[in-house]
Amino acid sequence: MDGMVNEIKLSKCVISENDYPFIIAEIGNNHNGDMKIAKKLIDEAEKCGVNAVKFQTKDIETAFPQELLNKNYEGPNSFGKTYREHKQVLELSFDQLKELKLYSEKRNLIFFSTPFDIKSLENLDKLDMEIYKISSFHVTDLKLVEAIATKKKPVIMSTGMSTIKEIDAAVDILDKYNCKYLIMHCVSSYPADPKDLNLRAINVLKKKYNCLVGYSGHETSANIAPSVVLYGACAIERHFTLDRAMKGPDHALSLAPPGMDILVKRSRVLFEARGKEEKFVTDSELEARKKFRGY
Image (tube, rainbow, N blue to C red; front, top):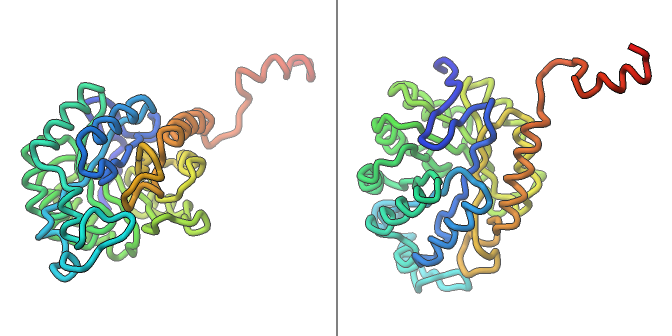
């Protein structure tokens, strides 16, 4: 598509292949509708050293089909008798999001939230977020993609359950509005089996779209995602929770603080170990070279 965007500059960091990976703690709905839990998650994310925290914002009646909202949704991870009631409990108000944005920024974290519909996008626009997210669910919602593109902010787009043709259509819109964007390889299985992750698709996306590429993972392990930096991925997103056994649909596939801490540390070590695509004698080898070869 259009020419390579080498970096996306944000207020607190730069996203590029030459910087430590941009790491997003996807809080999503794991606050369970409780502001105390939401703030605790932000506190723990800061301790882990992530760059950003992300939430999700939905106008319930617009974002989901009425048939789905009316369905019975009673179960161990449900917060209501119907899917509508369940979602209503989990949804944060504009004022709550505004409070969490300020709370995050005081902790030197970038705050953003994924809009699930145009009405939610217009509300989030009032928060003056510096970056937007298009979820895998919405790659084919081209009206929403275009509405996000018109905001003239950098965009992160996940590509789970999407074909190249479907991604092409969304990317064409982002290019039309001259958006700076980062495409995330993603597998929309919850949780994702490691054998299904297909990490080499990161190389396919880089070559195809000539853009910054990252990885959004749903596997339960903290050990796999850091390896994507070896493919040139410059961003990693993982769901984040206080406790994987908590009530709610996403906690089990999320990372708790110890796992996120591992992810951050390992991704930075692997970034430093990545090196260049050339073979050369390093400065650290010169002493051994002199000792064993005499020169």
